[in-house]
Image (cartoon, rainbow, N blue to C red; front, side, top):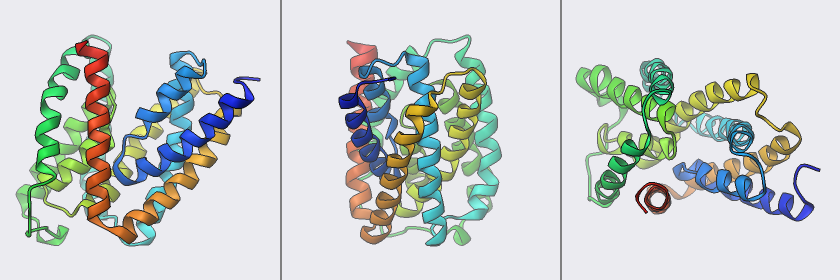
Length: 253
């Protein structure tokens, strides 16, 4: 057996919670990857197995948001290519540069982003009201830069995408979260292919975890649609706090 029965039961519970949280605010990997490491998996197998879990789980959330009309296809069509290119460039940078400096910069940037969540706004935009500068400058810059971040470092990419869509593009938080999922799905799928080719995925563990993650993503995405921005704001803030704490412990202490 890959892990003990008790560890498997614990991982299934964590996978459900991670999927639920990930569909609302991103950052499910902040729960799942450490849990897999604690269960005894080597780092590369933990990352690869988690990618199988997160890819299948995120696909459920994406489908649910699509059915409910929360995905903005023009935004996706403009940004997805820049995200993929950025991810490839980021992966190449990761081979030659240290991620420690980037992590330290993020520790100091995160409080600014979290503070922006609580600024009162009444001017949320629909995608049809965007100017050409929004569509052909801001979206490519957001998607390209965060694609680089995802390929280079990774943690919290979905949360940063949602936050960027909310602050820079001035989308509502529900729409920001929903559309961040499709970009996350693309980066997850690309990473999963790499781990599969390298033989770093444990399917016997990954598929049961994926089932629980899919259930969590399904219920979480329904909850977002039902409860709106208030719950997303609280969950996103909590995930960013967890991300900042993780980075501080790992790279500053």
